[in-house]
Length: 135
Image (tube, rainbow, N blue to C red):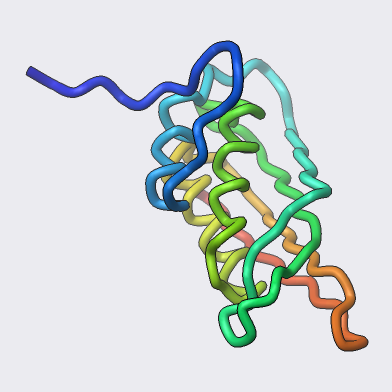
C-alpha cells in the first residue's frame, strides 16, 4: 500500500509546521498544473526566522519569481512552508538557497529566483538572492 502525499486542510486553521523539511512535502503535494503563464511572482512580506548566533528573530520578506514548468506553487502551501522557518535558525544566505532548492524539489520550474530581504538590524539590512535555471 502506498502512502498518500500530505494535504493541508481545505478550511479552518492550519496545523503548525514541524520543520521546513516536513513543510516542503506540502509544497509538492499541493502544487497544481501550470496554466499558460510566463512568470509567477509571489511576495511574502511577513517572513520570520531566527538568527542562529543570537537566537533573536529576524524579520523581512521573501520574493519568489519563477517560470513554471508543469506545476505551480499553491499559495496556502507556500504560507505554510514559509511559516515553518519561524523557529528555524538560519543565515539569510542559507535561507535563500534552501527555499530555492525546496521549490525546485516541489515543482521543477524552468527558472527561479528567490530574494530574501532581512530588515535592518544593528544598522545593516541584508538581501540574498538564489537563482536556479534549467531545472
